[in-house]
Image (cartoon, rainbow, N blue to C red; front, side, top):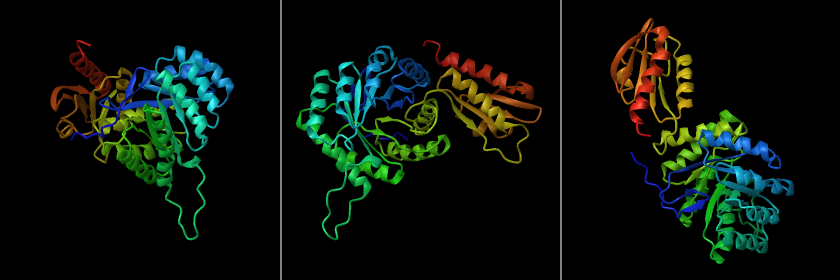
Length: 362
């Protein structure tokens, strides 16, 4: 089933279109000291090789700002400067050619300072992400006696709208928006509301989501809920881990919804007492090999010779692994029977044939 995506107004971050009819863009953020330009560039190249399409770097001080020209000049993908508190760092970032800005309306509250940044961004045609975090919301106004505070998701939306209006008043529409919280229902509610109220592309994700395992689950649930409703134009899977772990998870989420595929889709038995070979080890080896090839091929590792080809008939190639012997199949049809010791090599060989046939002209 095809997901009907919300129609957003496109913006360009360097050479990458976000929103409109563009594919959903995968991005990440470096965790190096931005002042160390070489370390930041090394990590950027590593992420780009995995499929990262936009990179964000923290600019917390003037030392980071001084390193930005080299980073921007040599980065293989567009660079966004992440700005908090000090609008002057946004100005410095614009002067050296960053491709985008992230401003947090929770900690740059002076309208005049925001307008100063917007004027410079408008001159250079650089988009701004209005990036709201639930953990750094503006203070609540004084409540009347008996008045209940609005829910957090509403406060997030209100913070975003405050800055969006400032930008719109200056005839600036190169806008992206994000409203991130740790709590998945809060995040989803905020994005649903902002998607209804504005036409701008949405950067979606869950913030402060935890270490790799828990963050993968939390992000997958939150991001997938929104994407399934057609909400979202670019995603970042935030986790307390090496940023390289974010990119495969992002593509796995997109692939699970049939929105984008990069690298293999692995179909594998859940394993049970009928298993006669080590399916878990074999599946991991198969996934590792085809992941390195980077082609969108569907590969199956099944633990039943009788039902395997039929259960995985949608796979481009697969193995139904029995004790001693197993079947190599393509699109559900057995093409040969091989010895157990040859499962991996035979599957790889057949998979490479499929890749050669599918991408002969590329």
